[in-house]
Length: 210
Image 1 (cartoon, helix red, strand yellow):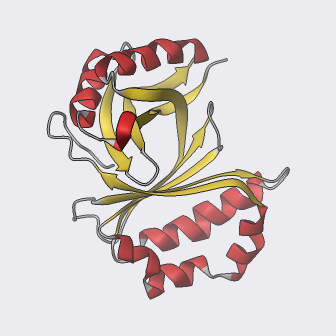
Image 2 (cartoon, one colour):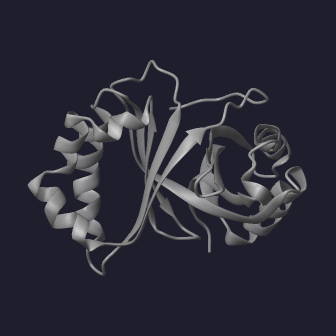
């Protein structure tokens, strides 16, 4: 089934936890992809041994699931050291420039989750009207975006480009996390995964944020 697609997300784990060659592989994938894309963000977590490559479609459009396997094969050819590759269709449902929008991103923080049954509408309202606008306005946050993963869960990805990991412990960030509405919605997260990535400089390809 074709699903609305703004980005492709390529997730891979690497042999020995090394990130060497990621930037070149990302550039090669974007140049050769049969679906016209350009690099949005390349991020790496040494702790998780995992890389996330966000490739933005040149023209957002519904994409069929049959297109994903050839895309995974293409990335495997570009980065043969990989252990596993997953390609997902992502639909953008929220985006906001951050307080520190003029700074270069150094870290990329992602919160992934599935909602309890029946809770997605309430969680989406909380995310899009209170939580993500509030976090985007915190000094140190460069960019905030929420995406729906139509292939490999969890369903919801809340993504934040940051100047420093210390942003997460700052009083303004903690104040946004500690609201009454947050206390209502967060217990209904399931399969929650929180990952702090380093942004990998993509000198071999253009880098964009918006």
